[in-house]
Structure formats: C-alpha cells, structure tokens
Length: 284
Image (cartoon, rainbow, N blue to C red; front, side, top):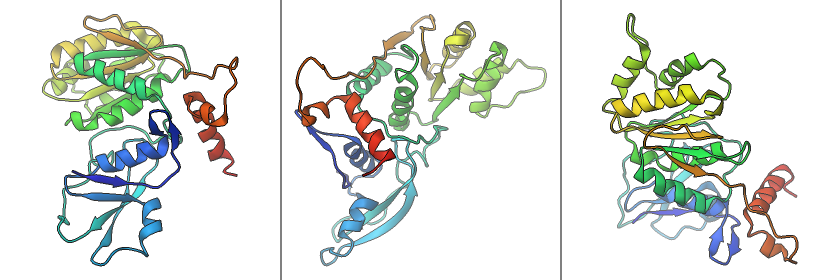
C-alpha cells in the first residue's frame, strides 16, 4: 500500500471526482513504493505547521510526474512504524524516455485511455487515427507516459511532422534512440540489431505524409525485434501486418438543445478543457 496526497479543486460528477487534481494525486501515489506516503507541495503548505507529534516531512525535491507537465516538488511523511528509506521514485525523471514537457494539462479522455491501453496490451503495433487536431498526439504522449513502468528499456518519441524527406526516417528514429551509424553498414541493420533484445515502446508521431516509408521501417523493426512495441499517430493506418487501429474521437460537446446547469456542463470534457485553459489564462 502506498499513498499520494494532493490538495486541489476537483469536479464532482455522477461517477465521482474528476479533473487534473485527481490525476495529480493518482500519479503522486503511483510514483511511490509500498509503505511510502508522498505529498504534493500544495498539501505540504497546508499541514507543515500542524503535524502530529512524532511526524515530520522530508523534502524529496522536484520531479516530473507522468502527466508530462513541469516538475513538481514532493515530500515524504516520516513517521514511526513506517520505513523511512525507499528506492528512487518511479518518475519520468528516473525512467528512460525522451517525452517532452507539456505546457498544458491533459484533460478528460479517461475512456479513450482505458481503451487504448487495452488494445496496446493485445498487439505490438497500434495506430491512433483521426482528423488533424483531434488530439492524437496528446493522447499518445500521455499513454506513453502512463506505460513507462512496463518498458524497462524506455519509451521513445520520434516526431515526424517537420520531416519532409522519407529517406531520413531511419536516421531520425536512430537519433531518437541514440543509435550511432556504423561505417559500411546500412543504418537500418544497425538499428534493428540494437533493438533485437530491447523491451521498449517506440512512438512514431505524425506519419500521414510519410506513410509508405513509416510502414516499411515499422514492419522491419517489428519483425527483427520481438519485444518491441509500436504506437503511431496518423490520419490513416500504416497498413502493416498485425496492425490495430483506434479512431480518436473529438471531445464531446454539450447538447445545446437541452437546458443544462453549470454543474452539468462542467461534466463534459470539452467544457472542462475550456474552463481549465481559461483559468490558466485568467485565474480571476
């Protein structure tokens, strides 16, 4: 049993509490180990002057949680009867990856996250498809962060949106994975051999303008690397053997034909996203 404590302002909906603060508490708890109690800085500020006798707080410093936002400061409760020393926290800053910091929070998509996680557990190649701007990349990044614990050799993102030359895809993937080119040897062979025994998740983002080249490389790597998993985002499927696809829907919007209270509206993911972005822009 481990515990993560955070203080915030979640939204109350029919199924319970939702919102960024709920996810923040869950990810703080997920970073710990059995017998460990972790606090966010928000909770620390509220209780630091009112601790019970025999209890103290240890500052663990700033760390990146799996929600991809900027580092947060964590504290550990020290109390008689519980261990005081633990292995390093299970965080983005510790586990091998190159996932970028996001300037905004990840809102909603609980159902989509559960469905994509289930699909990725049953296949080695999953492509998130959908129209431009529907949120494929953000969903893939958050899924990759959530699955870090399952890939001891890391989660690695390859961003292809700015790449216009299909012949550079292999070099771009190798660079993201820190694989060096060897003289007199095809880079794809070196890359394949480096991945042969690795258990990692490779995320290919924005494949649609380089479909044929992405498909060829993906199929090659999957055939030569039996423990590799691939998560791709594209407006269309790659079309390789064994590939599964998941169509990412746009966030649901309120039915304007039916009167709704503010409380009912804030249960809709698109409204929650708007409210959080608006508050971050103008807190008052």
